[in-house]
Length: 73
Image (cartoon, rainbow, N blue to C red; front, side):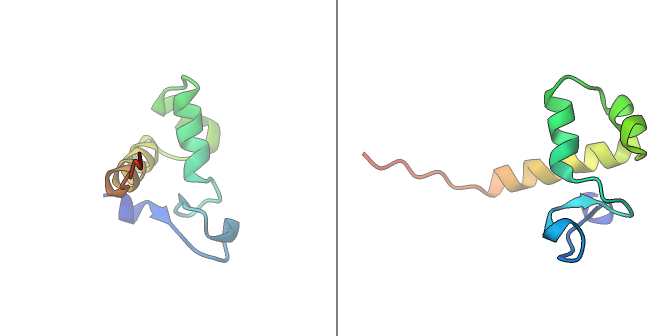
């Protein structure tokens, strides 16, 4: 789902992932969620849709799921 709503383009915000059709970075959406805002409030604040907020969460989950943590003792 997120592929249709998240865009990565070097010409927009230096390649940071943004909500497609906007210049709203995914990290701003995630930071707003972390700060306690709800999805609908974020969508209203940034002129996006609730589905865009959910796509940002899905995008972040995919990134975290592919991370590999190595602990060296």
